[in-house]
Length: 56
Image (cartoon, rainbow, N blue to C red; front, side):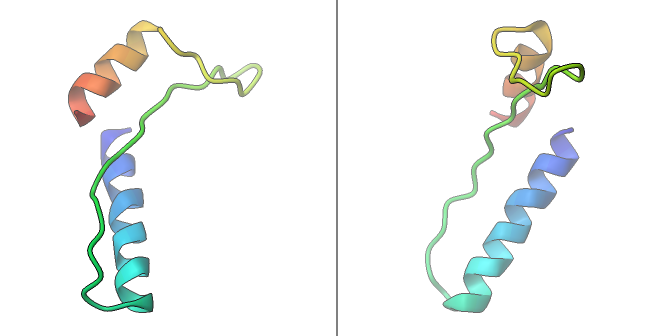
Protein backbone atom coordinates (compact mmCIF):
# COMPACT_ATOMS: atom_id res chain seq x y z
CA UNK A 1 0.00 0.00 0.00
CA UNK A 2 2.79 2.42 0.87
CA UNK A 3 4.66 1.64 -2.34
CA UNK A 4 1.51 2.32 -4.36
CA UNK A 5 0.98 5.64 -2.53
CA UNK A 6 4.54 6.71 -3.36
CA UNK A 7 4.15 5.60 -7.00
CA UNK A 8 0.93 7.60 -7.38
CA UNK A 9 2.50 10.73 -5.90
CA UNK A 10 5.57 10.37 -8.12
CA UNK A 11 3.27 9.99 -11.13
CA UNK A 12 1.57 13.25 -10.18
CA UNK A 13 4.90 15.00 -9.80
CA UNK A 14 5.99 13.78 -13.24
CA UNK A 15 2.70 15.05 -14.70
CA UNK A 16 3.17 18.48 -13.13
CA UNK A 17 6.75 18.61 -14.42
CA UNK A 18 5.62 17.68 -17.93
CA UNK A 19 3.05 20.48 -17.98
CA UNK A 20 5.30 23.11 -16.42
CA UNK A 21 8.96 22.06 -16.02
CA UNK A 22 10.53 23.16 -12.77
CA UNK A 23 7.21 24.11 -11.17
CA UNK A 24 7.29 23.48 -7.42
CA UNK A 25 5.15 20.64 -6.12
CA UNK A 26 4.65 19.02 -2.74
CA UNK A 27 5.29 15.33 -2.19
CA UNK A 28 2.54 14.16 0.12
CA UNK A 29 0.24 11.22 0.52
CA UNK A 30 -3.25 10.83 1.89
CA UNK A 31 -3.52 7.15 2.64
CA UNK A 32 -6.90 5.72 3.54
CA UNK A 33 -8.38 2.29 4.02
CA UNK A 34 -11.62 1.40 2.29
CA UNK A 35 -14.15 -1.22 3.30
CA UNK A 36 -14.03 -3.89 0.60
CA UNK A 37 -17.74 -4.64 1.00
CA UNK A 38 -19.05 -1.10 0.54
CA UNK A 39 -16.10 0.89 -0.85
CA UNK A 40 -16.56 3.46 1.90
CA UNK A 41 -13.61 4.96 3.75
CA UNK A 42 -12.86 3.13 6.97
CA UNK A 43 -11.46 5.98 9.08
CA UNK A 44 -10.25 5.30 12.58
CA UNK A 45 -9.41 1.67 11.93
CA UNK A 46 -6.19 -0.01 13.02
CA UNK A 47 -5.07 -0.28 9.41
CA UNK A 48 -5.53 3.47 9.01
CA UNK A 49 -3.19 4.13 11.92
CA UNK A 50 -0.51 1.83 10.50
CA UNK A 51 -0.73 3.47 7.06
CA UNK A 52 -0.53 6.97 8.52
CA UNK A 53 2.53 5.98 10.56
CA UNK A 54 4.22 4.41 7.52
CA UNK A 55 3.50 7.32 5.16
CA UNK A 56 3.89 10.14 7.62
